[in-house]
Length: 193
Image (cartoon, rainbow, N blue to C red; front, top):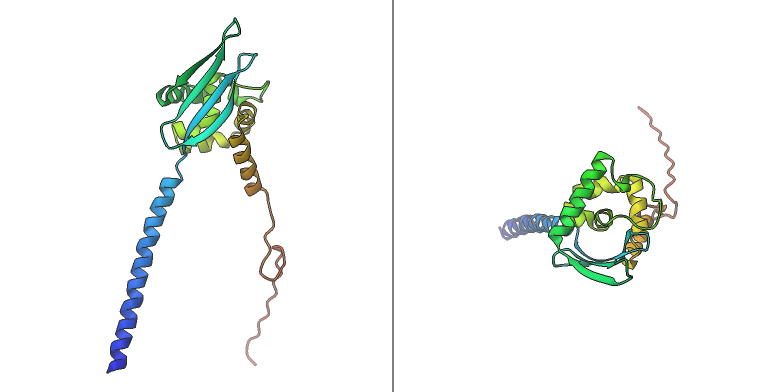
């Protein structure tokens, strides 16, 4: 009789562990989806002598997205202004609509270093401002990626793009026995004796 009671306890303990692991699995997937959202960005954008803008500093931030814009007037005086998240969203949305209509400089090959202010903001923080679905559609555009690289000179962007290219490059994985993915298969079957 004691062995039946202990078998019941083992079954109940196993069922309890299965329920706990299922619950913790559900909780971690919710956390992953929250962490998958694009982080807000803090940008420092500088106007070039040709009138175009480049990102010279980029950092993820826990607060709202914002940008410091360094602009040079005709006398050579540098003016600094802060752009709020609302202003950044409006510019990025306007530039995205231009892109959809085929009227944005982000649709063509980069001609020089930098972009207009709206294009620079969209290229640097499109995912954080407009959402991941739009960011994914932008990243599928080859000219957008080239313009993004041409307009963003920050160390953060360089390290993120290098780690992304390392992850996407086809590195061969070795199996436990040392072969690198080449598989050979043979099968034989016999029926009867």
